[in-house]
Length: 285
Ligand code: C2E
Ligand code: MG
Ligand code: MG
Ligand code: MG
Image (cartoon, rainbow, N blue to C red):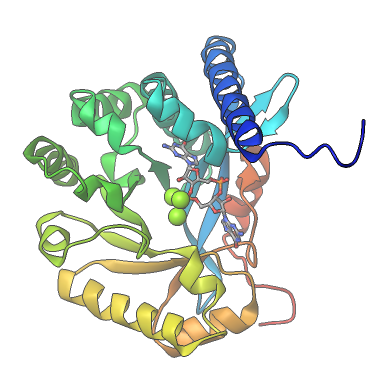
């Protein structure tokens, strides 16, 4: 009522905490409903050969079409799903839906590319994840070589032989393993060489700022040397300009992903890319 009545900071703070709690509780409840009512879909973002603009693979990204809130970002609801164990049914849905899409594309006469699915470390801790992957691949009639799994460096946080054994089992099956957001987490070189990654994804942060400061570019070069030592491939994510493409090519990085080429696309639009195979930007031939 009066401008002079200042809100006590601790009141504002506890109000905010309560609001966050309420939001989390509401979202958890709504996530349960979303699973039951199948409010999710997958979008696909191309992975591109930077030198030729050719489509080489894609990443499946979950989208939640909330009946009243609209599109809720996975950055918001995946952490909540991880805290509430709901990541188990959601993760299994993502895996199965991605494999179904692969199967549908093949049945439609398209030549699919490898689809990468993001996997939360929690999924590995909930039992026989490798077995689940094997079962879903068989159920959908998809070869392990057509599937990639992206995990972040948080896999290294708890030294777990169970987790490592599952990753080795997946790798032995022929599933491609990709280390996501590399450079943002806790990575020991010892772990890196112990885990069977096929690909390292350089985190967007380094790529966004590649041209601002030599530091970021030097880090990317260092990651590429590391990947070579580990016999893994490198892909840069978060490419938003042709200048960054050129800078990446100049240091020998040949694969990338980002809005410069394409936003994540609805399955229907992605089919069009599967036919085209090319993402060469306008003006460069
Ligand atoms: P991520 O796996 O590192 O995925 C990359 C994120 O960056 C995606 O956001 C993508 O849309 C966005 N992105 C791609 N290119 C660009 C670019 O050029 N510029 C910018 N600014 N952003 C770009 P999205 O789809 O919102 O996903 C956020 C995160 O949520 C993902 O990060 C991943 O950690 C998680 N996530 C998404 N889908 C799933 C899923 O099915 N399961 C699990 N466990 N996590 C998922
Ligand atoms: Mg990812
Ligand atoms: Mg990433
Ligand atoms: Mg991420």
